[in-house]
Image (cartoon, helix red, strand yellow):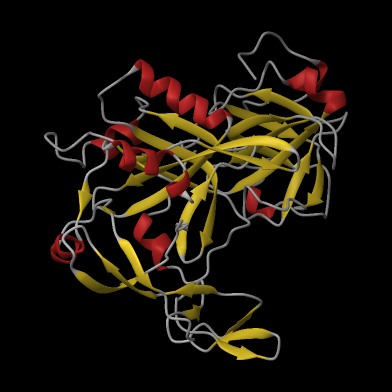
Amino acid sequence: MGSETGQSSAQCSFNAGSSTTGMWSMIKDIDHTKSTWALKVRVVRAYEVPPHSKGGETLEMVLHDAEGDRIHAIIKRPQIAMYKTIITEHKIYAIRNFLVLDNYQSVKTTNHPYLIQFISKTQFREDTKTELPMMVYDFQPFDMLHAQRVINEKTLIDIIGKVINKSIVQTHIINGKTERLMELTVADPEGNRLGCVLWNKYINQYQDYVNENPGIAVFVIFQLCRPKRYQGTLSVASSFDVSKLIINGNTTEFLEFQSEFPADGDDSISQTCNTNCSQGEGSRDVLSGHAAITTMEDLMNATEEEIYWVLGEIVSIENTREWCYLSCPICHKKLVPEEERFRCSTCSVTLGEGVYRYYNITLFDARDNVVGVNVLFYKYEFQIN
């Protein structure tokens, strides 16, 4: 995508600057009834999808109209070269004559039941005379996300937050390929937090920025990211090529959000370990003396949410059915066996599996105190050697 360098035949043959009434339709009205629809839209997001097992190379866009409604658009390989250099995010375009298809996306960029596909007769050109509101982000408040009992994991969302924590980078082998992930913790001005999982190229983008700009507060917009609740914890993650990570931009959205934080606030970013961190960098920090060790007595008296390391000796693990329970991943209540599945009476759902929660562990701390503590295995899994 880039700036306009000239007109192609697909851009001609209609007046993009004519009235917004009459021939021009709204996105909410688009359906299968005809193929001669005409729209005036702003490009929310434009990105290329490389060839994959389910299809060839495509150029794809998310568009919004004057009412803020969105629809997804697809340009296939024969037409990509024609449009690639003239499509720029956030610009306004007029478009007419396109194919209307059912929204077949497995993970959707919009809630519209249909999407549009460019064809050889599609007419498309930039419209510099029409004014449309700038509605390229639809930020989801953290408290509202956390309050949802069931998260729609198949529709992408936008979030904005201040980075307060980051994990180490992990490497996984997925389908024979090496993939890297890192999790950021972002906060809103009210202190609500949300995990943001970055994969591969998004990690490089984030690390390059903080390395070039050390010691400053980091605010991010994560556009078209995928929400997911895993073992009771809600987070968002990058979704292949469609997601966009924007760091410390100078747009109105960034400036207004940053102004809600105190000017003398803490801008530091702490680092924690990820899943199985006892086998990784976190445990090496403990053994090398770089991580602070606390006692169970001090931990029980702690009033602030922090990352704590406790060094202890296992006394015993009781092999009974009372030391844990199988919980619902949505509401955390105890599941009831129902034939080969499990029933949550609170959520009124039947599940194939649950999450084990609350382990009663007795241990000696460094001061020889014997403490019985209920440990909530909430998101991370720790291996005890």
